[in-house]
Amino acid sequence: MIIIHGVDTDLLPRHLARSISDRLRVMPAVVVTGARQSGKSTLVQALASGQRTFITLDDLDTLDTARRDPEMLVGGSQPVTLDEVQRAPDLLLAVKRAIDRRRRPGQFLLTGSANLLLMRRVSESLAGRASYLTLWPMTRRERRGLGRCGVWDDLLAGRDTDWRDLLLAEPDEPDDWRALSRCGGFPTPSVHLATADERAVWFDGYVRTYLERDLQELSSIAALPDFRRLMRAACLRLGQLVNQTELGRDVSLPQPTVHRYLNLLETSYQLVRLPAYAVNRTKRLIKTPKFYWGDTGIALYLAGSEPGGAHLENLVLHDLLVWRDARVERAEVLYWRTVSGEEVDFVIETGGRVLPVEVKATSTPRLRDAAALRAFRAEYGRKARAGLLLHTGTAVEWLAPDVLAAPWWRVL
Image (cartoon, rainbow, N blue to C red; front, side):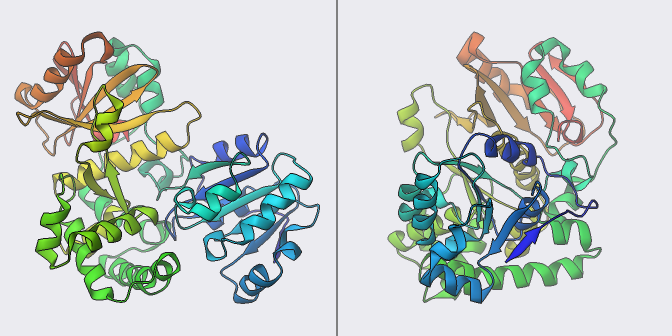
């Protein structure tokens, strides 16, 4: 147990920090979830204001206390931060009782390396008592010390006709998306490790820890080689619509096992399923999702491949998820595909309107690259904002009156 009195001023700020602070002023409990090593513990310690008790269940003695006598950890009057609570889900019952005895804002700040909303005991214990946030690996601008994601709010708040001037005003310079993909967004490999060999060692240790420890806390997996083979197969299908039966056939696993394994990957923030856009929201639930990964560095390590266009898409999606999950106003990120094969990589839906985004790994986009964006706009009319085509070049230009082409690094 640690009493937090101060913070390291050299810590890189995170986009989610303000959202956590805002919600602690309103809710008795705030829950921050995300993949292991995404920086949750560092962030919640840095957010301590005044004195706040910090308790991590990674400490075996503390974990034993949490299981035997949880009231001892949460029964005091001081605000408490509980780190890695998925390791002792029954501790949340003691948190519930403490909140119900004396409901006050900011009483508990909890972190977990699993999506606790999908864990029944947790979601039932904290129903109506907690606000949930997700900390994804670091964005490009967080790695640069800016503490933010891309300029999505500015684009949505501005007029479409002002987008070009807005992006040209961004004080930025070209960046190498392939290098960014290889480093990923976990703080250690992306900020503190200098070489590919060093990052490979870290990625190997991360995957082993995930398979041999974190995964076992969620669900017992006897055949770890099968699970790792499925992870690799999923990483080789980034940006694709994945049929679980076909995937199972490729890795020699029955479809129910594939379904279970994919759910575990999603629960632990390794896999990201991107739903399809449709005006009818029920149809979104039955359309096949596209697969992406929570971190491109891990995905490339598992796949043993070089960065391609799907990894650039994954970088854009990651930035969008960081933006989406820090907002109070609801926003959705989806993809769009027609039966004839027209496809828009991302559709941002918020405030009753939609913004279509296409990603192209080309430095010289042409009008034909905007065909799907224009088809989307024709389909949804005034509901749709202008299309945004992100590319790897340097020019910011209108390819058509309704499609702006811009370098990805001016947005992310």
